[in-house]
Amino acid sequence: MRKGPIPEDLSKRYRFKEWNHAVAVFSQDFSEQWSDLLGCLRDFRLKKSAIIVGGGGRSQIPQQLDGYLNKRGWAEHQFDIVIRVDGAEIEVPTHRIDNFKAGVAIEVEWNNKTEFYDRDLNNFRLLHQLRVVSVGVIITRVWELQEIFMPLGIGSKYGHSTTHWDKLLPKIDGGGAGGCPVLAIGITPECYDANM
Image 1: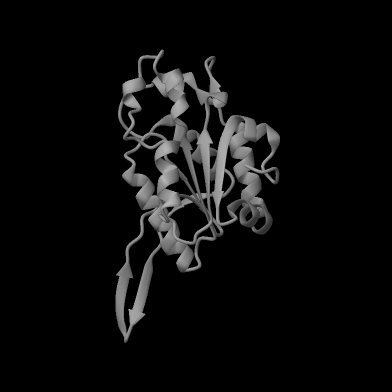
Image 2: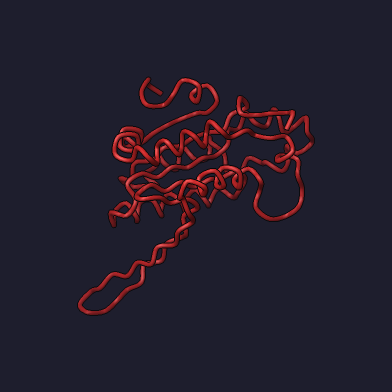
């Protein structure tokens, strides 16, 4: 990615790719939210203890990212949308957004089915058309993390059909988010901390 608003220290730890000038829109028009995101990425460590923990429920990894944002006023949000046509109301279902703050939506997809990307991008598209979301962000993992997972004996838990960078990009390139500016962020091995 070209030089610009993304600090060099973060560009060494994460992979970034934007569509429809997402970084310019985000950093210039939503400076508070942009600062929150950069702080969240800077604070995040991919802890060995969080990777190897077993059991059901939501992974500690998205909880760590969401927790940082929640402390800064971001919140899960479900939009209630109704369109009126000739006096008849039509409900427009959307999925809840993990983290929303004044026009910016951030989804964290750590290890879900790839259909979650379709859901997130469709949500961004619809909410952008309705002028509710100006920028959508998806934070996910890069496939190269398998090099960490395999020696830990958990590589099979993170299969090819789960959410990762290489599955996300073709969906956005294919127009999954419509005209919504989207910033994809990939968690790389540079974020890993084996001592935590």
